[in-house]
Length: 320
Image 1 (cartoon, rainbow, N blue to C red):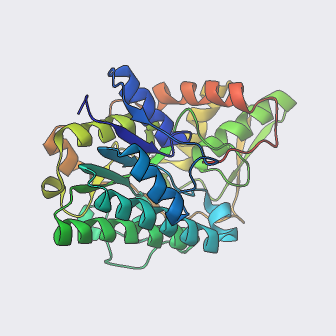
Image 2 (cartoon, rainbow, N blue to C red):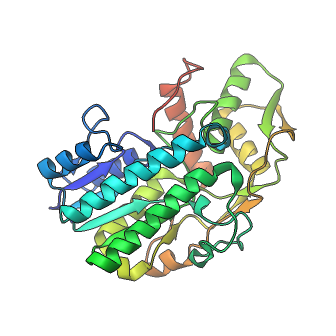
C-alpha cells in the first residue's frame, strides 16, 4: 500500500484531514488531494477528468455534505442531492478507472431509529429512520448498496465503513450546522468567555451517544486499506468505540476540558433525536482493529483546534 497513490476525497474536512495526517505519519509519499475549485465532486465531468489525469490506485471517499440536527432539518434536499451526486460520481469513476480499493465512509445514522442496541450491521433496513436526518441517511444507504452492487457485478473491492459520531481537529463549529460535541465546545467556550452562569443544551440530556475521535477513524481507514477486502466485511462494517454516554455526561466532560464551571440547563423544547445510538463493533475488533482515544483524552485536541480557528470569530463557518 505504501507505494500506491491514494486519493483522499474531502481532505480538508474532519475525516479527510485525519486520514491525510495518518498517512503522512506512516510516511506515505503519494497522497492525492484536490480543493473544490480544482474538483467539484458533484460534477461528473470534473470527476472523470480528475481520475483520468491522476489515476489513483486507492481512494478514501471522505467527502460529504454533513451537519447536525438543525442543518439536516432545514436543508434535507441539499443533503440528499449533494451526497448522492458525490457518491455516484466517485464510485463509478473508481470502477471505470480500475481503482484497486475504495473505502466509502457512511454514518451510523443509516440504522433505524429504534434499532437494537448496540447496533449490529444486520440492523440495516430493518425499520424506520430517525426523521431529523433521514435524507442524509438515505443517501448513505444508497452508497452502501452501490458499493455492494459494483462488487457483485464487476468484482470491485469497495469497502463501506460505518463510523459512529465523530469529533476532533477540523470539525465544524458553526452554531447552526454542527453536531453535538463541537456545538457543546463552542457554547461552553462562549459561556466561559462572557461570564454566563448557565450552559443551555438542547433536549433533555438523557439520549445516549457514542463519540469517536477522527484520528481513530483515520486509523481504521488505513487498516482497511492495508488489511481488509470487501469479502471480509460484507456490505458494511461498523467503526466505533462501543462506549456510549448521556448528553449530560458529554456536556460535563466538555465543560471540564473548556474550564467552564457554570450549570447545565436543558432546553426540552428542542428535539432529542434518537434515544440511544451505540454501535456493535465486535466484527471489526475480531478482524484486529480497536479504537484507542478515550473522550476525556480526545476533547482537548478538538478544543485547541476550535481556539485556533474559531474562537476569535463567533459567527465563522466551516465547509466540510
